[in-house]
View 1 (cartoon, rainbow, N blue to C red):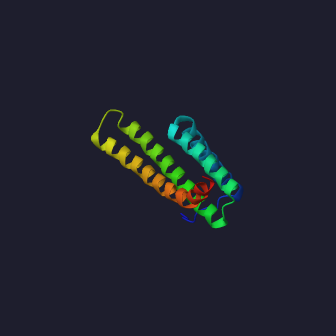
View 2 (view 1 turned 120 degrees about the vertical axis):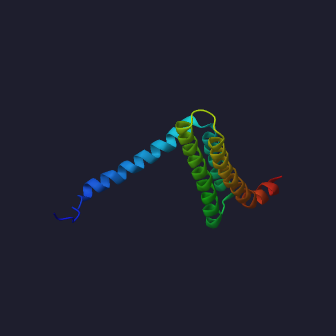
View 3 (view 1 turned 90 degrees about the vertical axis):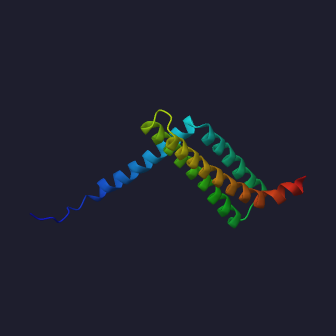
Length: 131
């Protein structure tokens, strides 16, 4: 028996890759619909982007703001996924389930503190100058 793998047609591989993006966007949309914190992050993101355009921040500052936003969104999405899985496998109270949720929430908190620091360093002096 020949164990040489059969090459998959390129169009099938491309379709699966495109479909995976669809699944990912569906996941973000589901989190936005169901999680209040995600909605808060969406509003905060819009405000920060608006401030960036208003103040004309530099390319480096845009890069830092983008990384901060992406980090917070990633942490919140992972936190949401962990909470959903924990609720699935442990519908009743269990101390380890609570610990897992608390740690995941802590990751979002730390990402938020990092983003706050970036925001204060970039926007703080500009807002202060307006006052």
